[in-house]
Image 1 (cartoon, rainbow, N blue to C red):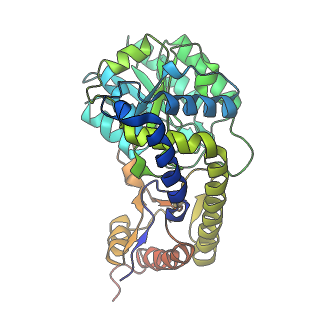
Image 2: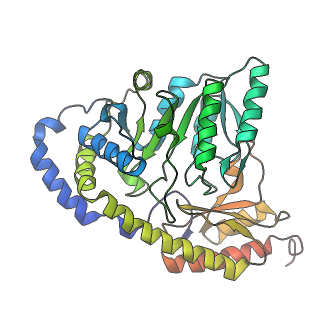
Image 3: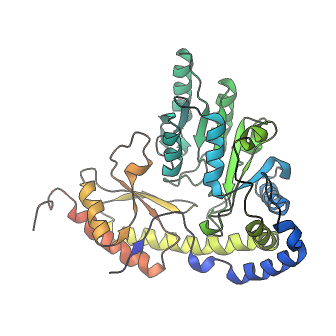
Length: 377
């Protein structure tokens, strides 16, 4: 039976720049020589890749970023883990969207943090709700250690925070003296217009820690993310880093490729992802237009779908598993682990025909999980 894989934040396999990386590897290795590769790369990582990250930030945000304020990490997950190690002790309060990336929630639960969800709407975290939460905590003599947010192409919902909301976000963080952790892993995957400036580019130094990655546009297999923070925040974060730094070999090759092809690669991959999103939404409309709703994302890798509230979610997910349709249950993204009538589709990885066929199977499973059909032979 064919597997239809709609899980994980993975780009299209055909967009992986094999020939470009092969050529970049030859140039980078000949130029670097063995001396560079027999040494540990250090906590901040390869300077050329940090310069690529800084240039990307300047060109997308219009703001200068010092390469010495950037640390290359083993994917964005290591960046998040370093932040939590530095800031979060058991019992500490961390705020995040009510719906949040399950990997982040897993790290926070492992750190034994008290996770408080803040309501999110069509524009991301709701600032009125955030202000109410911060005011209530302050009245109890409590202050969160961090506010975690995915403001651009939010995972799982695909929502985007407006410029006005970002300005108020910074004002509230300043007023209540809380550090914001801005996870912008999907900031380069944009289909319509341009995203508003990042929180990091607008906030006073040290108020925001910025996390991004190359993995979502090149491939998670390269394991290359990064974080940005000024001193002394960077020193605090690196005090918890014990791995000797990221792979110098992978960094050299990726840096050599991206410094010549970054935006061309982004345009090419975004065109592929946009077509796959269109195919997914058309298939959902054709097969389940009368039963489900979804948030049509303007970027990112995920589509957040709502099935009827009375859907038997256990039966739905069991049926999907039996028929080899892999997508992620909404409950995985809930701070309170609520059993939500939602499913997240990751649409960039599967081929176009697999998207069409997989959604047909998904539609069969959704209908079979409705009350009128439960228990019917």
